[in-house]
Image (cartoon, rainbow, N blue to C red):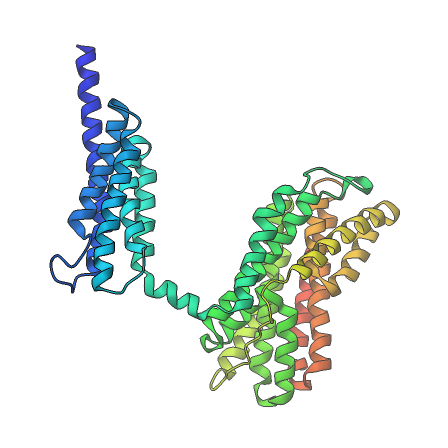
Length: 425
């Protein structure tokens, strides 16, 4: 009796799996049929019915491999591939279309049917849905390729190089003075910063300045708030009437840096995050509110130059950033051992003028082992304050007086509020 019950349940499971295989084939077939919906009957190599049957065929092939011979699946797959090749070859003689996307989609449909029966229905369904989306978005994908520039493709490949190729090769062990140098962790921080900058670059690249100062200031700040400050300061000197709106963009970019500090803390020193939220949030509000006020008052007729760098990611810059992180970590350990908390604050103030991310990442990591949480929080806030005040100096030197007045007050107030809250905590 138990044997009969098990056999019944097994058969029912197979019916369900074969039904899923059929539906997955139909899903891809609907997309393929929609693309070729204007062709006459018989002009399509594979439509809804063919894809549905091929999906079911894949499921049957997987079952036959289990109950008959393991050679059943590869032989049936080969037969399906030859049949599809013959059909697409005959179609090519009538329509000069050398794309093999349809052929690959048909063979994938067979594999998804087999996967649903032999392995995992959820995995097969996910793969089929992704395949249907890729097939359905041909125009959008080709449109993105047409918009993609050579330097941007190069940057994307370099980002993959430093993340999925170089990162796993580095030793994950503490080295150097006080064990503060971990090659794997340092390079992981480099990848993190590079990825954020990469996303910020393409946010502005795809959205464009026509989306407005809010979009441009927020997302260009992810790439480089210093570069945006210089760009807008120079434009303010050329077009003084745009100074208030350009100042709003600079303030937004300076504010964009602050959530990144919270992200670093959440990833590297989560114990420090609750103490960092209040001063960083207060600094952000002090920058964002004046920026929004300036934007609402002067937004008519505004169009800023796009604050873009020549390359969203340069491998040399990534290497220099890694070296800078290592130097900051070693200096931080030496100054901590020599001067205590005062040495950490000195490092934060000096390093903040050049790169707030390096010192923020270093202090977030040191907070887990060598320095107190309060010291790390105050050091990060000090570095961010100095960095933003340094942007005011850049605006004064490259821009005009009106722009400088618009950003100096909120930036100074942000530094005072942030430092006061961090100190009182």
